[in-house]
Image (tube, rainbow, N blue to C red; front, side, top):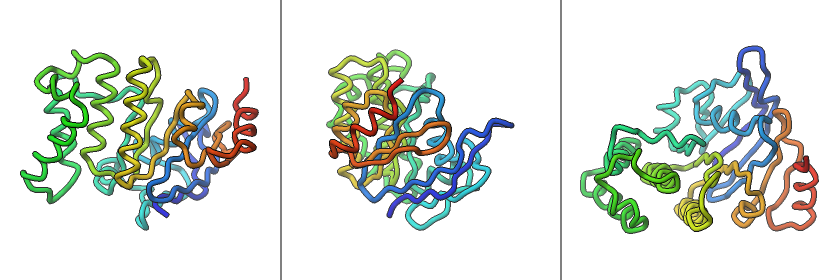
Length: 236
């Protein structure tokens, strides 16, 4: 088991956002995290990544307990996050944004770093063509690709992805989902928060539905009966 979460609680001040979540993910498994807006999905990802401190519970990655660690240490231990706002560095070029990701992997030589960059550019020719451009000059879809590529360069064990396709053209959506498959094929476990539930289910091995900070439904992505329970749970 790559990720194990037990009895997780998170507060924002007096607001009790995550209210006792238990969740696990095996190596190379994609877990869809679904639910209506404001139910705690993003807070769950931020808590795992160390951006928000949990108030109770355990988060264990590959046998190492993460809760209580800083976000920097959690990143170096193998957790990558693609947040909803992408967090692209605006004053840096595409190449410079990607170079920062190389710092996440300690002990990698310069030749390995060059090869890793070339693999990304080969996989994403759009970014290769724009490597000298400032990241803010990219389209929204290209910025999302850059955010995903940055995580891929970090060789993560676990990737947390928050609403990666919102507002993007269908062609770009297909590319983003292909990159998620690439991450899985590299052995990463993935928690995917996505409003496009139908498309996310083409990737998800399992899923959970979050409501008011708790998981209310779990199931397998390819089970018709489980999918029916999913859509009943998220219906407005």
